[in-house]
Each structure stands twice: as C-alpha cells, then as structure tokens.
Image 1: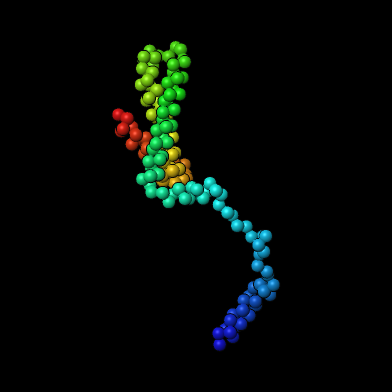
Image 2: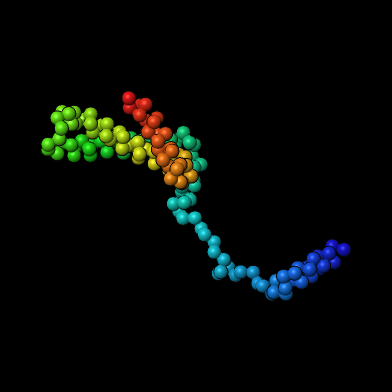
Amino acid sequence: AAVSLIALSLGNLVRERGAQVLKKAPPSASTRQVIEPTILQKLYSRWFQVSSLARFFVSGNLGNICFFFIERFIFLELTRQEGLPDFVTNYKETVSFFVGYLLQIITQHLLHAILVYGLESINTREKYFKTLLGQFYAYAIALF
C-alpha cells in the first residue's frame, strides 16, 4: 500500500512538472559551492566562546594602549607646533590628555564592538552612531 502511494505521488509529480524532473541529475561535487570559513573567521568565532568578562578585559586594555599612543602623539605634535594659543602652550599635557581621551572613545567603541559585542552591534550606520553616542555619554561622565 505504501509503495503504491509513493508511485501514485511520483506519477502525479511527473505529470505536474513534466518528465524532466526524473531526468535531472543532482549537481556534481564540482558544481556545488561549499564556502569554507577562513582561518580568521574561525578564530573570530572561537573568540566568542571566551567569556564576555575576559573579552571586555582584553578590549579595555587594548583601548588603554591605544589611548597612551594617541595622547603621546598629540603631545609631541603640540610640542613641535609654534604659534599655539597660550592656554595650549601652557597646558600641553592637559590638552593632549583631553583630546586623546576624546579620540580614544572612538577607538574603544570599535574595539568593544569587534571584541566584546560582535560586529552585529554596529552593522548599520544607525546602530554604529547610536552606540558611539552612548559610549561618548558614558565616557564623558568619567571625564568630568
């Protein structure tokens, strides 16, 4: 009974779609495309198996390293420049720290998105700017 039901269903399929359904061979292994993830994609996927606390720790420390170099670069550039306003000349350390801190918010935001929350957290322009603004608010409170 089951075999006759299958044969009847197959016969109906042939009539509906034509006999070419039976003649169509499955795609060969050479025509099928299997997209293997790259090593970088595998590492990134594996990275998210690490706890979010550890990822946040790594991201935060990388951000601190970035801040150090950004601040040093700004300080050296302010030292080389002539004709700056007196306030900047007298408070180069403060100005370089402040400007470096503001720029570091952008780098820290990107590091957190990539290393802690995943690229899905910034995969659209709206998400990116909304989360960046939120990070500016949080870091501005810490700055002042």
